[in-house]
Image 1 (tube, chains in turn blue, brown):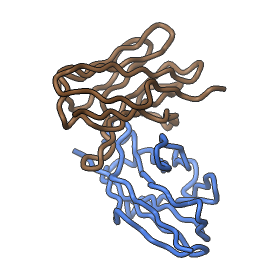
Image 2 (cartoon, helix red, strand yellow; image 1 turned 90 degrees about the vertical axis):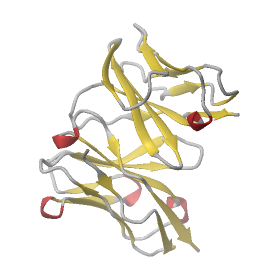
Image 3 (tube, helix red, strand yellow; image 1 turned 45 degrees about the vertical axis):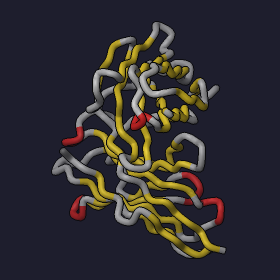
Image 4 (cartoon, helix red, strand yellow; image 1 turned 90 degrees about the horizontal axis):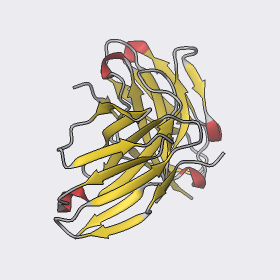
Length: 114
Length: 115
């Protein structure tokens, strides 16, 4: 089965530092890609999505992600971390060899240190 | 617009019992998907309903079932509960179905604890 890999189950950064959360997909046909955020005891909220219109996608809360077909990656970045960014982040894909279902990565918990 | 609502938010059941969870999608959305979230397995797709028809199904035993009503509200049922069914069950709605780039809007989830 096709997988979605998020490198690093936990990432810790200092407030004001760069945030980099990694996501790689395994389909030979580029899928649609999404990043979701989940705060404690809440559902998931969409940060941004790649729909093949542009490789650099800007989302909410200052996050952006770049689609790189050659690396089969869709890493999430934010130039300056804020305490409120502490949450769990999920990469998800649909389409390509993944079919019609939304397939999630295992998630990365982001910790922001003051 | 009101978001996706799920009831109840918390539930405690005993092994062997059955449970029904409810999801009301965003007004106008015809697709409802269900996911199980656990620390060990992460987010796993259960099934998707679109216009009262099951469109997709994940790899869960037959004890997990669902349905969708004509007003797009959906229920999922788990029979003969096992300890391993303890999880956060998330419902998501969207205006579309299929393999496109549409967004799914998630509810806050129902936390099910099986003792």
